[in-house]
Length: 398
Image (spheres, helix red, strand yellow):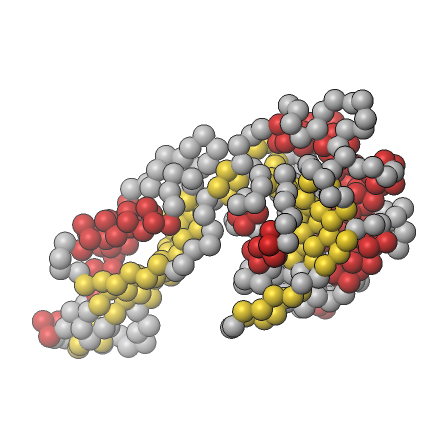
């Protein structure tokens, strides 16, 4: 595939690779060929860990100097579901009425295609002598356990002396229109399992049993009664949601022995896993009052809340978006987690990609016009980040 390849050509080629986590599916091999031909030094390390599948990843860089702009993303996709329900097959990469269909069209092979097309065009137009470096960090383990992907790839790169100044992660950040939202942070995530212990018995003889359900209702109400906080300048209020409350009791004449509940908290930068755990236990102890016997199991969390302060880099990307779309993007921290939570420990990271309305759905799709516009936005960003000799701008300019 030539350096002149369009974002549509690149996106179609990627969509035709069945890279359902943890399968590479040919997607990284495709990127390897294109980036190598463009002069990048490419590596494809495979990481392993007991209990998880081996995962292949890709790291590529052109240039050795600073600043280094990192493009990050993932080529793995979620399963397509019933392939017969798709209008043209989940891995066909078909275009109909100006819309590209396929698993990963927006999440996020389409975004990677735009990054790649913009970079190839930029390098071809600029010629040799790039004042800095461009790198690609692409994982095959974002939709899966996220154990053998970005987190290990970053450590692998750091051990080899790689350093990054800024990162653009191409997740589909826009709710409805290309250009409406940049993600400058993400909420943290913490999951807890609550068990209230009782004593099984016959419902006709309650004095011989101990029903755990009233205690569970008491503790659950205590956790959900008061807001955890009122939000911050860039984050909504932290939110606790129960996802299940269960006693697993098929009988109508038996008091159950235990009641179980699972909850998840999405929290802002006012908390971390430790301070949040302390608050949860404080509320539970107060509600239990020494009479409700309970156990709390908080799952290990690798999803802290983080914020990239709006700075010159955020302004540079916002300017590129506005110049191309006429929209000044909202700076947001909403949504779920992403691999940005790992990248933020290595350099400032923001997220901007396609419209995510159809991600993970049957007939996931993207307008071809959006691929062209996103490529143009990334191109403007590269021009501003690496100003030509005699021009002003760059990542330190506001």
